[in-house]
Length: 189
Length: 149
Image (cartoon, rainbow over all chains, first blue to last red; front, side, top):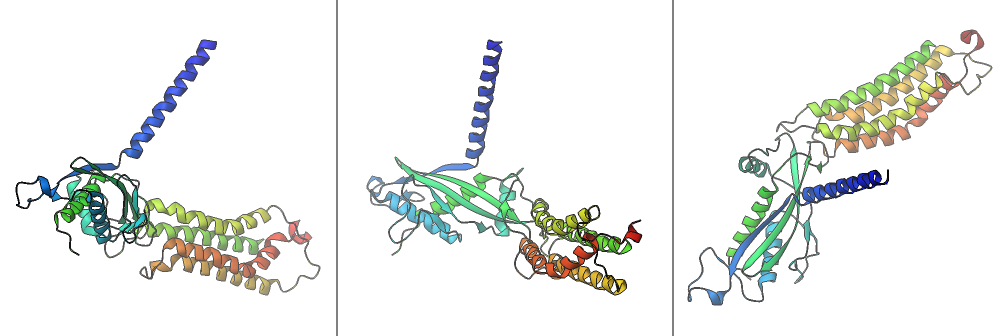
């Protein structure tokens, strides 16, 4: 009788552990991770400028990457809600940033459907998205982690969490591409 | 008895039409092919609508079985009283149905359907004085002995 009770307790514990692991997997499932390689100017091939390589001054990596992320997000009409961005205060490496929810243009939804075959978003609704993520500098790599949450609404509805399948990789990749392009452009001012 | 049946029918029809109006939004699309209401969002509108009508219809149905108030001694002018009761009930229900359904006539006037249903809920509270005495009289008062027999 006692061993039977212990067996069922162990079984219940295993079930709880499995459920916890499954939940952790589904929460982390929509996180996109990618890295952008960079070089320091002193380590290039002589005095010539690098082509298609991000060049960051030593000691200024975090400030430049933070500014690029904020500029790209603001260019896409997002506001960075956390951390508060003002003056010289930007996003620190490892610090979690989060945007507000912004409508997705129709052409972005169509691009998602082209690129993420099998995860087609129905075109009978409006979509909006919010991003959150972090960046870190690891050696000569800028490591980006981005989670994208999609919302949908009808023409007369309010946005609610989209419960269908979509490609977080598409949205993460879109941000990474724009941040990469921004870092390749020489900073002005 | 017939008067009460007619008034009950108006209330139940009002509830049914309101639900159909909301359901119809989920089937209609705008010029760009976007659904006016996502099917999964219907429940969010049905809930306040059922709460709105539930308070009134629930009371009426309960009064079909329990009559808590005594009938006044003098009880004349029945026909005119019923006309007033019907007019008040129709005014209330048509106002609510207009607020819930006017987007079928002109969809592009800003705001959301949930805002409309909330306004309908609030309006129902404001218009309670129109239907409360009617419901109390026709549904809450004990019938005359001859009619009850």
